[in-house]
Each structure stands twice: as structure tokens, then as C-alpha cells.
Length: 248
Ligand SMILES: NC(=O)c1ccc[n+]([C@@H]2O[C@H](COP(=O)([O-])OP(=O)(O)OC[C@H]3O[C@@H](n4cnc5c(N)ncnc54)[C@H](OP(=O)(O)O)[C@@H]3O)[C@@H](O)[C@H]2O)c1
Image (cartoon, rainbow, N blue to C red; front, top):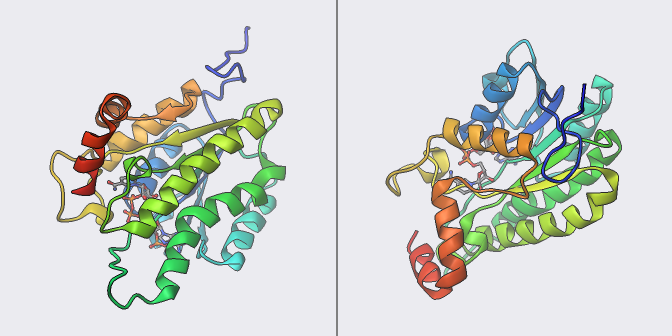
């Protein structure tokens, strides 16, 4: 039987065996856990709170990804499992409304940068020896604010722009390893993060399904219809998109 290949020419993982998902306790991450369990994968589900992620094929890992100890804990859990990782999804994130004209606790800036940017970089590095070669996929969940900042969330915007840039650099570095690196760009999704703002939001289940399909195809970027529209519009009318996103 012919082995299927994805868009990058890497062997396609139609049924990934082992998937690591961060931010697994709620929102998009919790929906991703369900999708991959349904596909028969063994899921390592990372978040600070883990009671929600308990299920037979799920290994919950309680880890604060803003700390070195948290990253190490995930690495040890993956090593203990003793099987190669097919998909790593760096999904955990927080968004703080910060007004730098007022008194802002610098610790909040450190934490936001650590969870949104440093953790995906360090976790990818820590799990590098465990990624299946060839065939593994790394997905980094960014945001449309990586295109143009949202003024009320300056550190969030900067962290996501940084993550988008890291994702592109990592893609180049991983080519000869047979590892696919994908940026997932959600539009507004109905989760705790967006509670009380925005309309016509995607459900976490729809976003998770889009990510799963994108991983299977080996796409460079996963952008559901609404994000795709903004990305296209941004090529033609960046100042219009900047204005719209600044009001998000
Ligand atoms: N929702 C949207 O509209 C939207 C749009 C664009 C991009 N995104 C991105 O999509 C990703 C998921 O967002 P979401 O809306 O699903 O968020 P969410 O519902 O607020 O969930 C965030 C997840 O991150 C985990 N988390 C937070 N701090 C953590 C820490 N220090 N260590 C480990 N895990 C931590 C949380 O678990 P614990 O609290 O239990 O640790 C939770 O599982 C984020 O990267 C976000 O920036 C979301």
C-alpha cells in the first residue's frame, strides 16, 4: 500500500498515536482533546488544572507553563510514556488587558510573555528528542492580532506576533527533519478568553476540527474561513484591517 504524503511531502499521520496538547482544560484545547481521543490517539493534556481532562486515553499533566518546572514536568511525562510524539499543539494562552499609562505589575507582563511565547519555544525544544521523525507536526496557535496589534492588549499582541515569527523560523529549521510546523490562526472563538465580547464567534469544536484537518493535510497555516478572509483582506488593505483589529 502506498504511504500517503501531506502537502509538505512528509508522511501523513492520518491517525496520530500520541498528541500533546497544552491549554487542555478549557476552550479550544479541551475541544482538541476530544477530537484526538475520538481519533483513537493517546493524548497528553497539559494545563494547571487537570480534573476536566481525565479520560481513559488522556494523560493529564498539571503544569504551569510559565515556569521551567512546568516545562520539565511535561517533558518527563512524555519521556515516561515511552512513545514518539506525532503532534504537539502549543495552544495554552492568556490575554491581559493592560494599559501601560497606568500602574502595571511587571510580573503580569512576564507571565503573559512566558505562557504565550516562551513556553511554546521551550516546550518545542524540550520535546524535540521525542518528536517522530519523519512525520511529526508542531502546531502553534497564534492570533489575527499578530498581524496588527490590539491596543488594549499590547503584550498579548506582541507575544502572538513573536510566536508567528518563531513558527516560520522553526518551519525552515525542521524541513530536513521531516517535521511539519503549522501556524493556527483562530478568528474569535467562544471561550472564557472572549467571554462577553464579539459576535458570530466560532465554537471551540469548530476551531478544533479545523486544526485537526489542517494537521492531517500538513497545511502551513490553519485559518478557518473568517481568519482566511481577514488574512486575504490584509494583503490588499492592511490599514483597514489594522483599524478593524484595533477595535476588537
Ligand atoms: N478564543 C479566541 O477567540 C482566540 C482567538 C485567537 C487566538 N486564541 C488563542 O487560542 C488559544 C486557546 O485560547 P482559548 O480561547 O481556548 O483560551 P481559554 O479558554 O482561556 O483557555 C486557556 C487554556 O490555557 C491554559 N493555561 C492558562 N495559563 C496556563 C499556564 N500558566 N500553564 C498552563 N496552562 C495554562 C488554561 O488552563 P488552566 O487555567 O487550567 O491552566 C486553559 O486550558 C490561546 O493561545 C489563545 O491566545 C484564541
